Image (cartoon, rainbow, N blue to C red; front, side, top):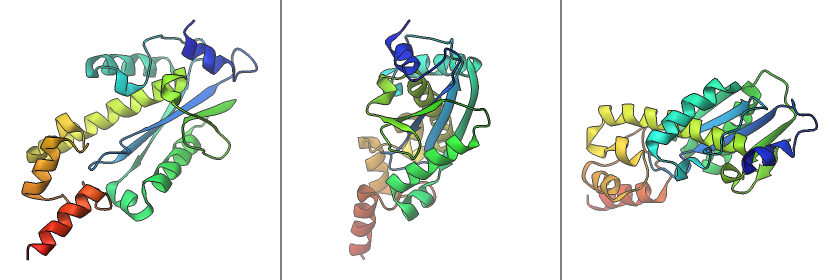
Length: 205
């Protein structure tokens, strides 16, 4: 039995108790939405390869995502747009999306384990995606689904190379922003690098 499975089992009173894992992907990105996944694994399922999605290769994440969903009792996705992030701020937007993803679940569960965020009625776990099987699984599903979304954006806006940087502030992404400017509805205008670029363009006139 993996350490992450043992971690989740600690929160079960009975072997068949269901545990929800919740994690987000895209919080630090300059472009694209935030994805939150709430996921309930079959309590007998275990896979020692499940980990924080950032530590796993793209090919392995995609393979694990399919296996996770085939061993999943239920999952939900909550998506927060760049406009919603700009309106609320990223912390409140993430908190709201996590509550929404949990609320969408229809089966009864014992506990909800959340990566880091103190959501009401849940157990926040620091570095939870590296400790909990359920949170790690949620992080992988959220990451793969968000990457697929960013690949579609990349086809629509090829100058920004979203299929490679998935919205993070990489050198190529910042270079594209300097050259072409931010895209309304895609970039997060409340984030400092975007605000700095917009301010620079305004002061040039």
